[in-house]
Image (cartoon, rainbow, N blue to C red):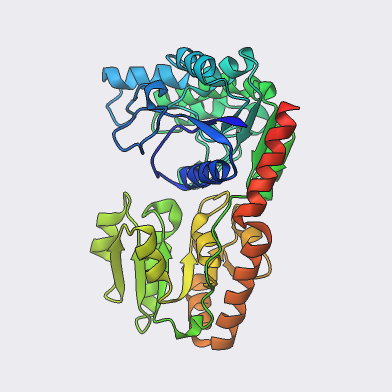
Length: 395
């Protein structure tokens, strides 16, 4: 099968890209041909299809800058349809598989072009974009569901996305995009939470569950021998770094090691207690070796993460996980991990201290986390589910 595989970034930016590249490798390993469509960008990985990539737009310029106007027009679909027509004409895909395509790939125009050209399309939702203009169900760092029922005008009212102008753009994009979801053949998501929340907020399309695949590693059999508590992920406020540092300060006898980079990197360096070590961004092999020295992983996110790879990758090597009871995390740790309320430093401190001192609990948790991933998130099983959906879309 020839699969037009679409994602706005063609480099490892976040969880959506990790899922995109993992599925791309799995599809090619199973004998399918993947045809890439993304945004042209200096950080991109090599692709034989890069000549078809949509031109780069910048979202880090002042509002008055011409690049910002170009980015705004792209968000609404400008400069996309021609690239889609060229790659479909030249590559003749059997089906399109879209991951995150909003903003940089002008998703309303992308969806229309694929439908008009008769390309069956499967769309994987990695966040809450169909029901929230800013895609994260947050406003000023707090949960927000005001756009329920398609009332996207709230994004303009509250200046979501960084100001009144950005909020108006996100509102217009959301209203343009909403009817385009009806032109898709199949919509999927990797968590039941996202599916249930989308339907509760008025998204009427059926959404199929398609788990994100994660490579199952040789399990850590004695996590209780680990020498530190660890965090791996983006250093951003929504990841709960401030809560984690507060817990670390209350547990001076426990070593904490933080792997990753992001906008809070400098402030974390300045405010970290002496028992916290910052490791920076690690490669996959380095990160796995590092995580195998931990007693448990902490994922203290305060946002509605859909399907956290930080949780999955820790579970995949049998590392016990302490997470927060928001978004899709509770179903990932169902029957295996420890959950605490988000933004609750007292609860997180107690959970870390309790796990640290209970060797038997750590071994049970680690084994249960490993088994959980083997049952539902193994690459072969996820690939089989995806192949079934792709064939269904083309039937």
